[in-house]
Image (cartoon, rainbow, N blue to C red; front, side, top):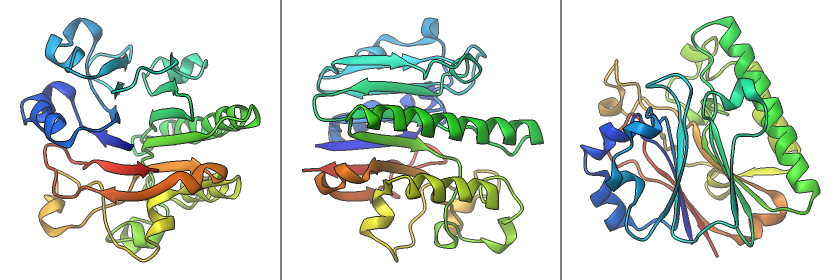
Length: 253
């Protein structure tokens, strides 16, 4: 089974760049999309009903903002929109889907760059997601927590760490939460398998950073430690264009 996560920076935008053809070629078993930037009434039929897939969407109240989607070959046992906290759920950031062997969380974590208030919102969201995950884990669930985390964890995870150490996305307080997440028993699958590999998943459009590969690795598949034995491989598909992010892949036994 291959599980994908991709911040597509607009579902209708990526549709115009060959997304449906890519789906036919790549054939993900499960794919979480972040930043769909679409409302229910704007959703084209060919994106709502991709042949061979069940589809689910969480829409932000604010138009043209945030939003996540899930496409799955296998019908989930259940799908929940949000984590039950209105201040976060109104931004369309989480879909929780239950499968026989694991619970999958497709998450678009907030960006904290806009203001001190949004940074605090991001940190609060981080803590609530961890509490939510721990609640599921305490019930015996295995978890895959995938998405755009909007934080690079270590210096290896971005091209210019020193220049960005005071910028949201690489602040000590944000990185400390990822330390905490790992200390609680969650595994960054790519970094666990490839501890020395320098590969990025996001490049700033404005500075044309992709051409220089001046990127950040901020898109992750985390699993709980107990489930890591099922992980076969992880990959970052840097050759896939169409967004300022590229897809990240988790392969399970």
